[in-house]
Amino acid sequence: KARAKANRAKQEATAAPPTAHVPPQPHINLTEAEVDEMFRSGKMRWASRNVDITSYKDGAAIISFLTEAPARWVEGLQSFVKKSINLVSSVALHEMDPERNLEFEHLLDVLNIDLGYLLLPEGLNRSVSRKNHIRRLEESWKLQHPNRKHTNLLHIIGVLMLHAACESIDQSIDHIKADFLGAAHWIRRAAKMGVSESEFVFGELFRHGLFCDVHMRFARKYTRRASAQGHVKAIASMKELRSCHLCGVDDA
Image 1: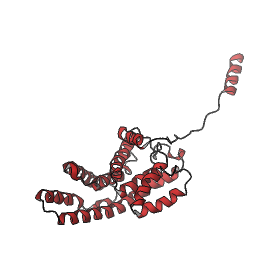
Image 2 (image 1 turned 60 degrees about the vertical axis):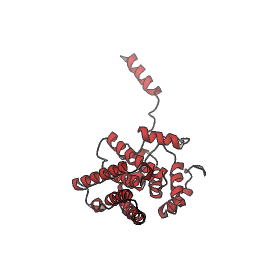
Image 3 (image 1 turned 120 degrees about the vertical axis):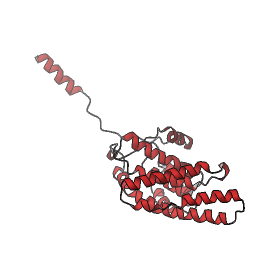
Image 4 (image 1 turned 135 degrees about the vertical axis):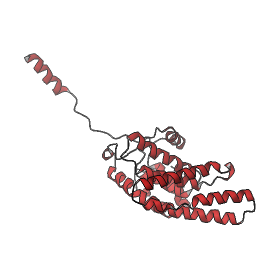
């Protein structure tokens, strides 16, 4: 017994001390094609309140972002939809093709859905209204002529899904991850098609560390694209990114 006790003491003395938790590091050299594939395959790692977010750099900032962002997204979405309606209406005024006129009429019908429900308190009514809104937008996107897709619909769908994802934080980890990746998928598509509001929002998701596999240079890349189109908030965001030492190379 004495020998066994001495052996245990020796093993405990020589055992390696427990290592501190090290948060996953971003893959700095990922190409845009590789990032796209990670989003499509659902392999993109992410940071959330349910995944020991305090272990990540600026974890408190991510929590704040997930808490405060929905209100900002609603404000931005209302302005974006209004501009989309004005754009479609101005084009429709000069359209003489009856088939195109029907397309515009259907599109305006979907765009004119009142976003007031997003200002309601969180609950079943808001959730159901948002789900029906997303469904109608997705149906409208599928029905559009392949050569005449209104890319703004992609952004609206994505932001509504982001809004819903921020309410799903009490669900399972896999459920939350699927919500955020699904939303990012739609916004990414619009951003790659040059929608400045999508470029800005996509850049913000990266900038606030929501997807921990991606280096900050991707935040800078999409934010720069939006700012080049005159997006006011993106221009302000670029000023912050330029002062950041982790934002990546100039040609990112």
